Amino acid sequence: MSSIHSQHDARTAALESRTVLLTGCSSGIGRFTAEYLRSRGFRVLATARKDDDVQRLRDDGFEALLLDLNSTDSIQSATQSVLKFCDGALYGVVHNAGVEFLGALEDLGSDELRLCFETNVFGTMELTTRLLPAFRAQNFGRIVFVSSSNSNGFGYPYMGPGNASKCALECLATSLKRELAATKISVSTVCPGEISTNLLLNMVRRSERVLSSATSRHAHAYARLKKSFSSAPGDPSTRNLRPVAQAIALLLESKAPARRIVVPLSAKLHYLAHLTLPEWLQDKLLYRRMRERLGIHV
Image 1: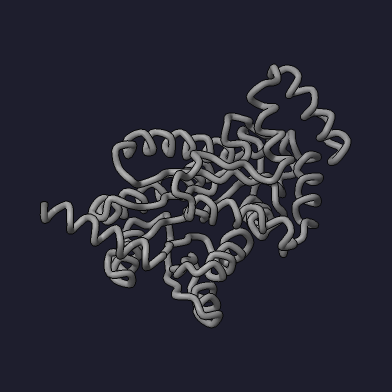
Image 2: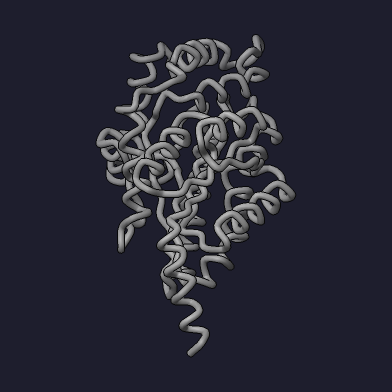
């Protein structure tokens, strides 16, 4: 009986604290969501991979800490700090941090593919499992993964590593949800469509080795892609980011969180099209779009 009371008290403390760990807050979706959740009364523990970004978050009034998902030591240190900050009463975690690479699979090396999975899958899941004991102790928690509207198996050309890692993350999230079905710990995914954030600019910079290759069979496509992504605005309008932040808040606040939310409507239509249209028709529509928008002939 005392164990039940203890669990109830811990859950009450977590509910009252409304403390949420949010990763990848240096810019874009993460930064906007941190502001949005704070405006809704959440205590946001914001993370970033670079010291300068952490300091900027602190200057703006956030409790911020360093987190590199490619480092087990960093994940362990951040987990300890988070649980210390909230005295073990953690309401939820929102996994937003991630990396992408641009390039054909025949040009990308194993290092690029490995880094994508290390960050988007292995590091993200390691952080989750390190937080699970706290969620189990209070028999409550909200786990939200920010994935992609391509996480249902749609592989864009030249964006294979990122698409594949998000598909893997989606599968693991589903497994985790089912493993926690007997608890009050929810597992959800937000799947945004393409948003012009610093993630795209960072993707181009990170992929420079591949994109600058003059001998690649895909050199023409790389030039077109590089120009398109480099000209994308690094500071997207709140109109584009707000639906994602609202979806995350809904999953955190709902008594019965949905398993998955795809936003905005255009991304939802794309998601449904992949589930229903035959692959040959998807290919035809994709190739036509690439010709019209980028001048790339596949």
